[in-house]
Image (cartoon, rainbow, N blue to C red; front, side, top):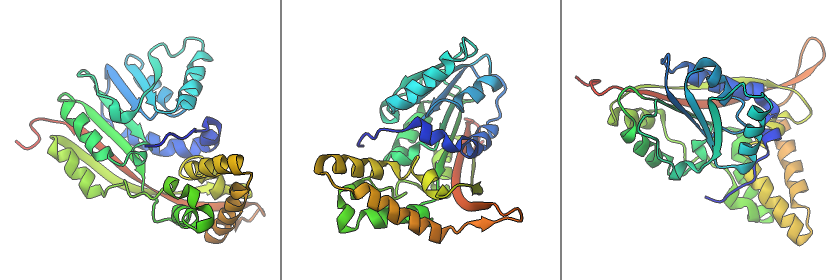
Length: 281
């Protein structure tokens, strides 16, 4: 998979909205005192720290493939002046990581959609996890939404073809049935569901601002690189087209106070499992 440079500040712009799925995901883990907890795809680390509050005696490790995200995460705990001595952050690709045998919990929030073969990676982890361990992941299921479909449509126009391969398609996401069978195959008690959050966003181009922090970022990076090399302005024209389409697809709502907001539906898939060797007995 090609590397992209992530912007922690832009990703954190909607930190409150992005926190909701993480909270719902980790609330489904019914464990009082784990010893080793892993947050794979931890991003800037702000949500990892919530687990340190919940499990203060656990050793908590956050991993992310992005050097920029890990730098921000380390700065976050440095600024806390020793308040999170049980938390550390390291740069690590998920596909080349193996869980230690004493791992109690693996959490992954909105990361696996970037790994085309993630079902194979997860299967390997589930096989290695000890009885009693928990696995919890959440991935976007918004590939049929206009905000995500239009990325591919626009990037595949001849003018923007240089970014076509970077366009997010959501094809890596599996069905809730497939994820459920995956857990059952490894003697995990499954808790799998999907939720559509109706996020209320504000600002002149709120859907663009939301999507450019994640799904749209690889395309925008490709266009920026091309513009810098060829002295073109593909980025600006692409963004203008995308913003116009999003305003049409998600028109603002004017409330009784005259303030404009945009309601943005965002579907998520949650996969939580507890390894119980006697589950089928």
